[in-house]
Length: 162
Ligand code: PNS
Image 1: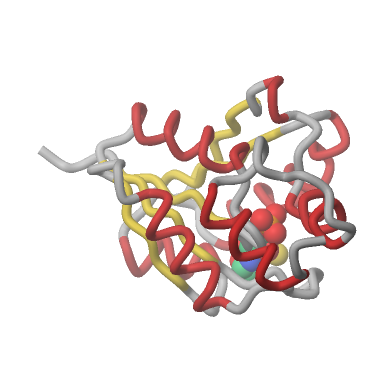
Image 2 (image 1 turned 135 degrees about the horizontal axis):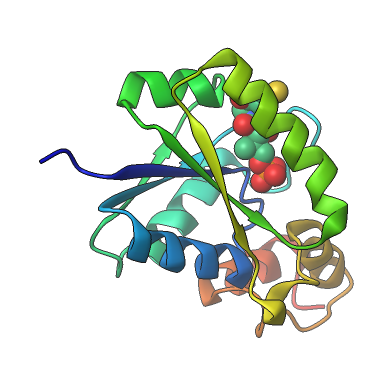
């Protein structure tokens, strides 16, 4: 039987506990989930792709059906190459909806074989974003409850102990 495959794409700069929650839930729904690090041209990166990939690999190692990958092109192209038909995205609030709808429709327009499935972010993490994490870490705030340890350590290294 064909494996039910899905991709969870993002820029993961950095990975947060909100992302991990979505990865876990997606891994319960699909046979194989690929967490794909892609380029978001509208965001200026803090961590290098190598650093983000290393963090993703460490933090998903305990999920037996989750893989990590990197792709420099269009998400729909990646889906075509890997024969993936489901894209997972997390939705935090109404404010995410407009952007996510536009991207989902654009992706579907580019590749009729893909569907985007939205998972509602756990309310525990609905305030959380990679940008907020970076801002708090930059000014020495405590992010240990909202990111995995490898990210906490990495941002301390980047910004200093505060
Ligand atoms: O975590 P993010 O920054 O919200 O993730 C956005 C991402 C990286 C998934 C999106 O920018 C993306 O898919 N980039 C690859 C290029 C692409 O396919 N763009 C969508 C069509 S406009």
